[in-house]
Length: 379
Image (cartoon, rainbow, N blue to C red; front, side, top):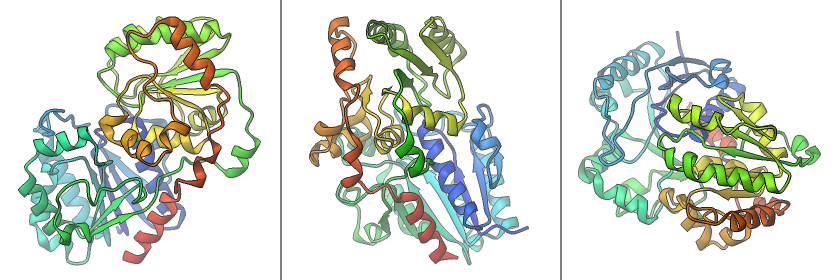
């Protein structure tokens, strides 16, 4: 058994992030690159992963403490280590591409120490959404920087960033040594899997898509803000489709399902193609500002409102503001707790029909193709 690329992600993040990693694996497979993926989504299986075009296995989902970025269920770490190590030994891949957030992947440390596994294998870190913003700087302060830098220096051959350097300047975000920044390659943003023909032929409907990605702690948002947003949409005689969070607890899902009405539909775990098509054709998208979800929505040319002022938490708000894209294309923190129903209704009404299609003139969405071409150079 042999695979050219072994792709690993703990999938400890949002639904948009999962969709991006899936698209990267799919793009490799469609170029006849033998790809094997290890997914940490055993408890929650998105439909598109089950029917993937590449070989894959599912692992229990690891959870991370948001304050320390260490694995909460640490007992899973040796299990992951064993599976990844066995996969490397059996598949003999030419590329081991792994993705992780700020910090060092504990489950990978024993593997990196086994240098014999990597005599003919390039180690490619797909760096997770690291931007120079106040929140990510705070995250940077929480981790063991010496250990992190040492890992990047000794255990990583290439660092891939899905963004463009002028918008996604991770090289200057942290004080990293030059021998590490020289490993960084900016590939552009990853567009959703939809043809240009479909985008040109799409017809905007009168419905609003509200999606929550994979976020877990959304009780306040669901219980306090969402009902008021739905009321405002109803006043405007629009329909609503709510896509629940991928990793929500049953109680949060139940709370949202109670909001269902004649003009309100609640869906869980949607098919990828159906969700992207719906997002492309809706009158307005409202989400919680996840990095990949924002990129998808911008590419589709769909007007966007973000329910929480949390784009600064993952940095894209600051980056887009700095490049004068923000004011032109996003209304991200205009719907917050405490806003009046009249104000929320006004924001939604002003956002519908807004033309954001010219975002493609300033943003590079060629990340998938650039990723495939980069991997090909390593094979």
